[in-house]
Length: 338
Image (cartoon, rainbow, N blue to C red; front, side, top):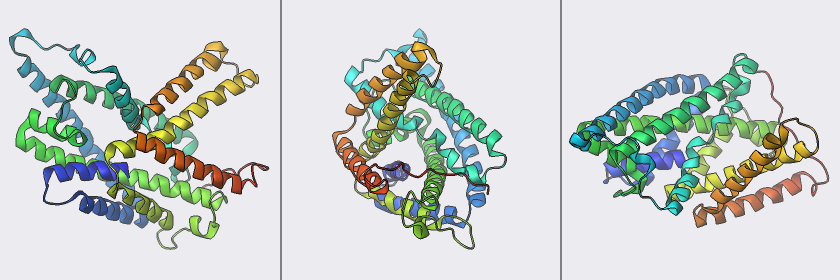
């Protein structure tokens, strides 16, 4: 939903004559078809798009540096300036709560375990490489963008990168940037929808989602969870009714709830004597992590918090039904060989 919404926002900024809802529907239709036809086609398409995206990131970073050097003049560039901009702390926290979205989903690749060659070896390596390369790219790009455009004033905050692209590279680069961004949204949309579709399938196959005949359905010809992929596309239509900030905050609500729970679970098993991590690793660090997650959660968009609470309550009601009012454990998801 967020991926398609971001892509539509940028395209609408570039081509105001076409409303954003048109772009959202086109994104959903194209990625849904590619994912239903098969994972191999989607993967090959994704590899090409990733190469284009990486090249665009490199060019953007270089142009930011060139623009910052030219703007600095004889006095030289102040490389430490992005760390000391006069941005209110409340803005920083609110921004961090939204920006956390960029660091979510590294583990979503595990939903493709059953279709991976030698998953026990390749899947952990994939997760680690995604986290390291992704974090390094995000931090470098953010730093260089702040060098070129200090502060947080934009005509349209939802299309800030588009505005910076025009500033550092002119109309020609804006065209290339927009093309690269559209490709990036397709690549991200394909990956996210593929992951969601397979997770829903695994949950349906293992009777976590019912009916099994619906969520556990595999297309006879394409061998893909076609119904679940279509469901993911349909849910993405919510993007027609909300903005980027609310949608990313809505997703982050779930992430912060989950991260808080993970930290509290570490503390629980530490005091149960099931792990030997020392007081810092087993108690102090996870406690700080839980406090920080809750602090970021309450800094989210208020509408997103309300939506998150409603979604959480609905989930608890379904879990209560699935476990006979919590009298039996929920089913586990099992990994099968492809």
